[in-house]
Amino acid sequence: MVGNGTLVVILGFAMAFAFAGRYWNKEATQGVETASAYYGQANVYNVACAGANIGCDSLFVNTATTNLDLKGKLASGSYEVKVTPMVVGSGSGCVLRSIGTYSDAAADYTDEVDVVLTMRQYSQWQFYSNDENGIWWTTGDVVTGPLYTNDVLNISGKPVFNGQVRTGGGVVYDPNGNNKPKFLGGLVTGGPNNMMASVLPTANAAGPNATFTNPNTDPSSTYDLYMTFGSDASGGNVTYYTTGKHDSSYTETYQTFWGTIRTRTVTVTVTSTTPSQTVPLSTFAPNGVVAVVNGDAHVQGTLQGKLTVVSQQGNCGSSNSGNVLIDADVKYYTDPTKNASTDMLGLVADNNVRLTGTQQDATIQGAIYAKNGSFTYQGYDKNGPYDKINLYGSVANNIRGPVGTFTTDANGNAVIKTGYHKNYVYDPRLATSAPPSFPYTGNFGIVTWHEETPKIVYH
Image (cartoon, rainbow, N blue to C red; front, top):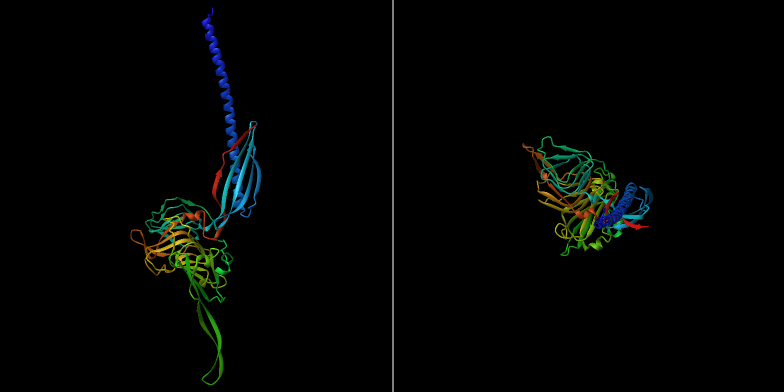
């Protein structure tokens, strides 16, 4: 027989189980809703990211498609991708926006991914070459920054690479060398990536007042623009002058020993030099670009501001035009290795960018681009040995040029004979910016990728 106490206990348990049942039922329902919401958020996130990737791929394939408008369905959701052109720094870019949507019985989900892309420039690498020209990286050479070559990488001794090295043809080691290179940023083999067909900034980019054109079209003529940066205490001025040589012929009448009157052609070399002028950089190159056509450009000094020096071959002989010559150290007024700096120099040549000085240590701060030729030291096989070329910036050359020679000693160590070792350090500003009108690769690169938090609207 059940007593009152027992009945109370039974009722208490019944009520407890009833409340627990409601709690467990509520928890189960919330668990299902949470799982459903998590799935919906994850799904719409994936849809938005997939749309962004599809849009980026379309831009990489066709860089001219800056009015991209894509729509599609994926994983029971939809994406819409739009591109808005924009100007970034000295070049062109765009903002790609991908909006993903997804709905289930409980809610509507949206997510957004924004991607900023810019047209990549050749300053994105510390060192770039299509053809290594059989030149070796040797003991004493240090490269800090990304290196890319479509060719084989020739190693002798113990060069140090502090950034990722990518080579299209693998690595070849000196058979007589004690080869212990350091690839501290990793070594990747793969390619090719032939991109030196980029068009140089033209005289149009410089403007008529900053374009110096050889008045003589004779291929044997020479024409040189000499520039010294920072010719006053502020560093903001440029001192410049031009000099040209060309052959001039005339007909001369003369009488022979026997009294016969004859004519002959006489050729003389005519030299002309303009007076030296000192002007502010903004006056010298209002658009940030100075161009030499059918001639060579010479640079030295300390630059305050942003400038790209362009040398175009034109219709003169390749040996007499289309080169940029570094006659002495080229530095920034505000050293970017020590302080925030807006100074930036581009040296752009149809043919070669050549160091001509003979100082023990050479300093170059700037981004170098040699479209058809090389970055090289003019006296690489005759002068020295010197210490180092301390280059802070970037080098992109079609064919790698020599800056020195070396020999391998009895222990297999590479020892410099003439010229310089290399100390090339990447200017990290060049990853997202570049000197005015610096040559483009023709490919987009992603600068930022921003993902919003998925949004939920319950029915």
